[in-house]
Image (cartoon, rainbow, N blue to C red; front, side):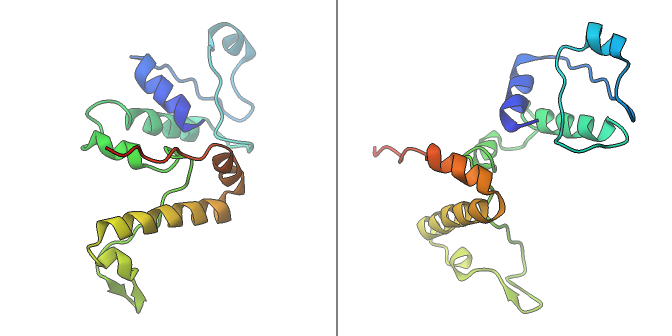
Length: 146
């Protein structure tokens, strides 16, 4: 499963029928004659298919119109730019001596955006070198000037 697949399923289908395997999977007669697309969460084994099915449904449904309050926010999610998301902080500004970064409290929107971009690149490089290498191969185009 990946984000482009979720987009395809959200845009191209009005109905999805999910068959969840258990232990060894699905009866081969069903798989051979009724299954049109087989998906996986990854290279590991679970006892049932309901958890991956819920992940698929959640990933697809959030892309359907009316699910997310502000559709434009979907464009700023992780994986939309090929990078992981930047760190998120809530209130209070200090918790147990841990501070929210000063730049995020500055009100300087350009500096905040720059900080977020740097954090995305660093986080992806450190946590997902595979994604980082892929991103390096296809870096985003600089925004065009008005």
